[in-house]
Image 1 (cartoon, rainbow, N blue to C red):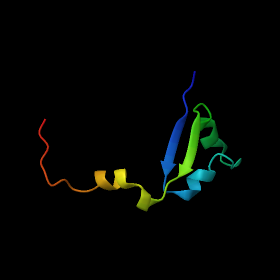
Image 2 (image 1 turned 120 degrees about the vertical axis):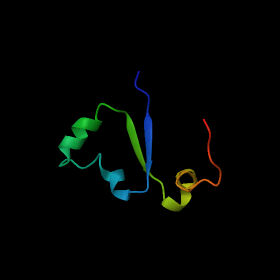
Image 3 (image 1 turned 180 degrees about the horizontal axis):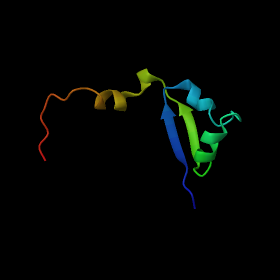
Image 4 (image 1 turned 180 degrees about the vertical axis):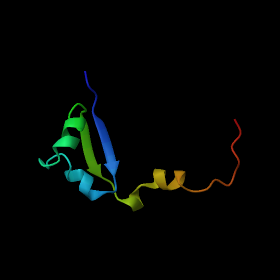
Length: 61
């Protein structure tokens, strides 16, 4: 059974990728995946925002 994969993006045009029939190459590539593409504004994406900031502490393995 294929699990759903949700893609959250701040790129609005990706939301409309699947309905565009002229993008057959991309559709062929992505059709094997159970994808849901949703728009997520940059300002609301606090996780990616936090990960992109320089850490104040050095990480040690």
